[in-house]
Picture: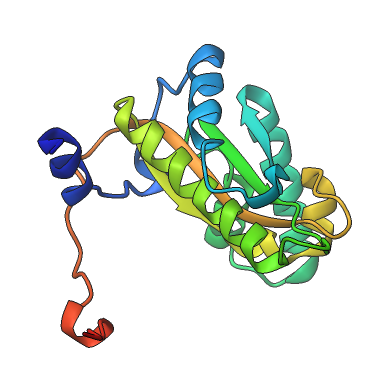
Length: 189
C-alpha cells in the first residue's frame, strides 16, 4: 500500500485562484504536468482533448479582452465586477485550458470522450499539486460564451472542460464539508 499517496489523496484541497502567486510552473514543469495529465483512460486512443497554456502577458491581454466582452454583455456592470473580469486569467501565474474535443465516433461514445477530458483536468490538477503547487479547477462564464471561446482559440464543436489555475499558494487551504457517503452510496451485495 502506498501510504504517502493515500495521505495525499485524503488531504487534497483547492486553493482559490486569487490566492495563487508567483512562482508558477516553468515550461519544463508544465510539459511534465501535461504528460502526466495525458495518462488517462482514453478508449480508442483518440486523445479527445487538448491544452491551451496561458502564461505571462497572454494572460493579461486575454483578461482585458474578456473584460470587454463582459462589459458589452452588461454595460451597467459595477466597477468592482468589471475589474474581476479584466483580471480573470491573471489570478494565477499559469492557467491551462483543457479543451474537450469529443466528437461522434463509430465505436467510442462521445460521453466516454467527455469523461476522458474531465479525467485530464483532474490528472493535471493532481500532478500540479504533487509538484508542490496550489491549484484550482474552474469553469466560469467564458466556458459557455461563444465570443470568449473564439477569443481563447476554442474551435467549433469543442468545449472547455476546465481552466486549471496553477501557482504558489499564499495561504493554507481549509477543508470544506464533504458529502455524506451514506447519502451518495448504494451497496448492492
